[in-house]
Length: 208
Image (cartoon, rainbow, N blue to C red):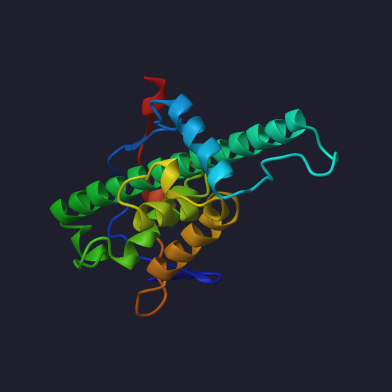
């Protein structure tokens, strides 16, 4: 065990660099019918009475009210697409961790570095830290939030399942809390994997 500053790193036997499976990611949200998403966002705005359906004492015209409804619906769609993008990244990261776990299990010099426990064990958060330590570009996606989204949702629900409060205010904090809860469910501090001892490629499936 090596300690640098406030971080602990596992001691990897030998001196070679280990090749890990590629991290396969999608950087664009996989939404097939954007028009349907927009339609459901407009229903949320209407059903939850986010904006009064009629003009108020001449303060705003009917056209202004409809424009505000459209702007808010567009905002909800943007927040939903951000949610889907984070979920996709989280799904990719957890699948990559699963592949890495299989790789570790087949190599004698790596087999004892991770616990064999109920998957995904919280100790696997060290792989998320490894991605960050390797400075992998993640296009503005917060990895803790992305993994938290995937831990919370097995599949990304349609926008109609969400309240406006979730899309506008709660999704980031909920996902971060989910990740922190998961990563904290270990006895003692989680040891990091030394980034200089591991290498992996990042493949953007959205560009293929």
